[in-house]
Image 1 (spheres, rainbow, N blue to C red):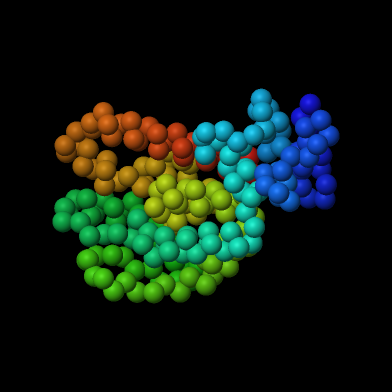
Image 2: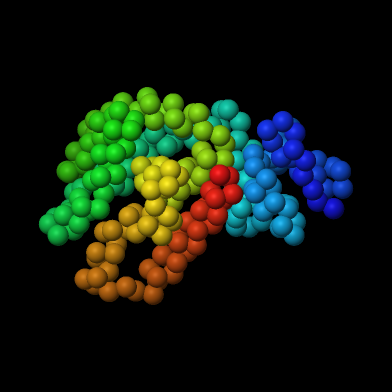
Length: 220
């Protein structure tokens, strides 16, 4: 029989009174009852092949220690310096105007929120300017393992830590996130067509975003 018990601020999980661990000395835990109930509904509380399932994302989060968190934060800061939505080196003026219209507000809002100057990439210069990301780094370090994992997984998929952040603060849903990170692809598809292979890739990406969205809803 599977069950969970609340101890202090965490819900811990048990099978026949034996506690479940994701790794040695790292128990499986969550912070809210909704998340706990969702895990209990699974037939087996073990990892499966889908790395973006609710269980696997929970296991991934619970396995993180302080060093892991710092590594993830550094990875996210690297992504920020080369964020997808900062790239504006396009020959097509219509595409350039469309991207400016859809993405500039997010760049401006992120800059104001974390008091940093973000630089749009308008040429192939090999000397990118260093960002002052101190406040964003502090923000990331102060997040719990579940929210940090969510931002990390979204960023690895979308290549945009800026849009991943705005997803987690409720600015838009996962479908909008997919749209905003595929503006150039959608623009080109309207010109050249939408091939079956790309449809399969897009459907898989949307499925992953949906799964991460389910995880996000459970941790809040």
